[in-house]
Image 1: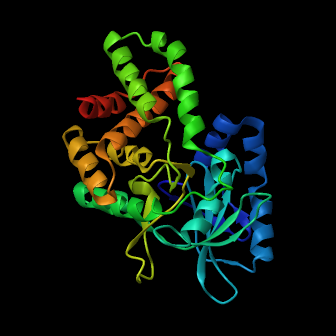
Image 2: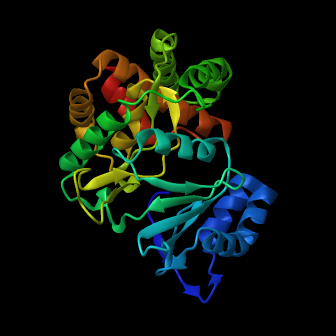
Image 3: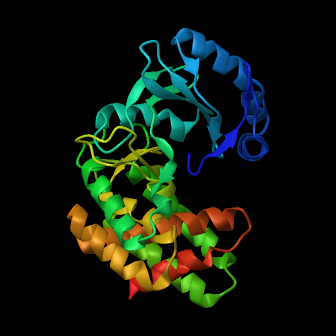
Amino acid sequence: MSRFTHASIVGAVIDIPAALVTSQETFNGEAGRAFVAGLPQRAAGFLERWSLRLDGPSMYGMCALVLPVLRADGGRAALKLQYLDEETAGEPVALRAWAGDGAVELLEYDDETGTLLLERLDASRALTHEPDARAATVVIARLLARLTAVSAPPELRRRLGPVAAAMLEQVPSALPRLPDPADRRLIGDCAAAVREVAAEPGDRLLHWDLHYDNVLGVIDNGQRGPWLAIDPKPLAGDPGFELFPALHNRFEPDEIRWRFDAMTDVIGLDRARARAWTLGRVLQNALWAIEDGDLPAPHHLEIARRLRG
């Protein structure tokens, strides 16, 4: 989940936000509608199963509903109800591997539904509100250094190697659908950069979506630091594939090189490989846009231009 807003809870009835309904219908069709319809019953079932009490208004993003709760011992937690798919299925695998080092701690998990009980963080204090964008970038880099220090568990199914191979297979048919020759050359250069590194996709545990809204403040600050990552869409791969979200969120063209250099320095990455995998993220997003009949986002293309030359 990225930025949260509030939804009211009246008794045991949960107000399902329209944005969540629309998102589920758009991306998951009938299965998404069934997921939304079952949320009140699912919430009630897990409140009872894990001996939880509601502790305030719910929070929601585009993919999940999160309920602030209290555990039987009075400890604060967050019940995350989400649609189970390839991306969300890897979340508990990653959170268990990180064990709270740089990421929110997993307290309970249900394999059948993908429901998680997480430590509660301060949803009102997202890193996106940090006024100093450079300081926020360094926070992201330091978290990534901790997260990518962990080897991807064998049970994590999503792997960068097959992802990169699939992208490269799509390029010949996708490029002719770009009307601007300069854009075709740019995306072609992104594909060429990926080909140079695709044979060594890496084996680190990646968050994949670590942008400023996916970093929240710790409520009880201790040795783990003031910020933790949430909502991973994990895969195994090269840490260079992690930099793109911090470049295109809070987008500032003249800051692209600074952010890229700062993150590679803090994480300790080979800059050439990190550049290639970042261009791979541009390629990935461009292919998704083309598949949907759209053009690549202009700020994504600008990232590629600034890193290519």
